Each structure stands twice: as structure tokens, then as C-alpha cells.
Image (cartoon, rainbow, N blue to C red):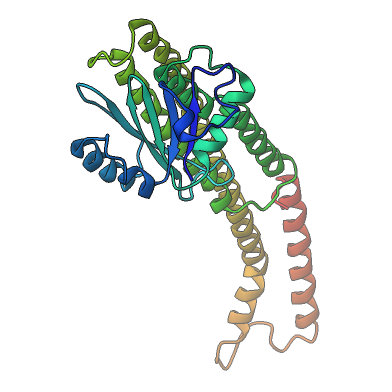
Length: 307
């Protein structure tokens, strides 16, 4: 079902109106099927928008009389999963969001709640939409950074056994979000150029705020990606230390039993005569010397803090 907003109304994004009651400029949310049935859209725009729906990318293209684009919005609960996608068609008096899901409706509801739509124009409505898409993402990054710091603290102070997959999931999330913000920044920058003069110069300049905000978010994502690499290196260092500790213990055990191995090899040789074989106290002497050597080595290794 199409949802249509009349931007000339006092509360444009809170009160839907019937299609026959709205006057330009209008903001519409249509499904793909509903959009395909519109007769007022050129074939060129239909073809390009159909291609954008399959691209899963944040992209914008300027034409002489209109602007088309698409959004591929990552799910904040699982940034590495499939994104939510939608596209848009913008002209002077008409802004259409083509969305088979709910992201357009939810975002416009937030626009109505925040009240950032201060001008009843379709260009400003698109600006408010794009700004709302990334408005709260610094808070999301703060929560992600807190989780990574807790992970680091668990590895350092409690020697927690953290899987490398957990750490790399943060890196993949940061990379996906960083790419998303870079694309949003490029989109806003192209719209701000206003080459086709679909919007006023003042409205075009407002998209520069989105460029700046998206670039800051991309920098934050890059910082967290570097942080995730540091966590991975810390994780690998801990694995190496555990392996070194295990090898050290095995080496110490081998060294402690080396004298016994030598004695066993010596007296186990198949020879007729060996010195001391006929001495009745030879066995006790060997056991005593071996015990003394083991005690001496244990004391030595403890002083070296190898045990």
C-alpha cells in the first residue's frame, strides 16, 4: 500500500493522506510493483532503478530532470549480514522511495519525531532522510568500542580464552560500516554538486553536512578496525606465550630425565663386563645421585623462574 506525504501540510511526515488529496511536493513510499505501474516515470529512470535494486550499493546518479539512487543499509545488530536495500527517485516536486521492506517507513517516522524537516521540499526531505540514516551511529560505535575494550580487559587481566573468530567479527563489522559511510559520503557529495540544478543552491549545500558526518563515521570505523587488529595481535601473542610455556615445561622435564636416560642406556648395554655391576650398593648409589641431580635442577630452574 502506497504511503503519501504532502510536504505542504504543517506536520508532513506524521499524517498520511489519500493519493487524490495530496498536492505537490510529495513524498511517497512505494513497493517495486507499485512503482513499475507509474506512467509518469521515464523508461530510462525505470531501467536504471531496476538495476540499482539488484546492486546492494549506496549509489546516486544525476540526470537532467531527476536524481535516482539506492541505499544499502547494514543491520546494526549484524553488520556483516545482508543489508536492507531501497532506492529513490527525486525530482523538483516528487520524491519516491521504492522499498519492499520497512526501512523507508521507519526512517521517515524518525524524521517526523526529530523534527529536522524544516523546509517543505523534496530535496530537503531527502537530506533529512539521509541524515537520519546515520544520525545515531556514533552511539553504536561507542557501544562497539566498549565491547572491544571489555574483550581486551578479559584477555589481559583474566587470561580469558577468546576465539579469534570473535575478534575478527569486530573487524569485519568495522570494515562493512566503514565502506557504507564512505559510499554515503560520496552520494551526498555528488548531490551537493547539484549539476542538474534539480534543487536550489542552498538545499544542495546542506548535503555537505552529511558528507562531513559520513567522513567522521568512516574515520571512526577505520579506527575500530585498527583496534580490532591490535586485539587480534594480542590474542596471537597470548597463544604464542601459552605454546612457549608448554614447550618450556616439556624441555625442563626432558632435561631432568636426561641423566636417568644416560644411566639406563649405560647399564642396559649388552656387555659382559661393566664397572660397578658387582658392587652391592650400586643401585642405591645410582638412585641417590639421580634424586640429588633432580633436586638440584628443580632448585636451579626455580631460581631462574622457569618453573
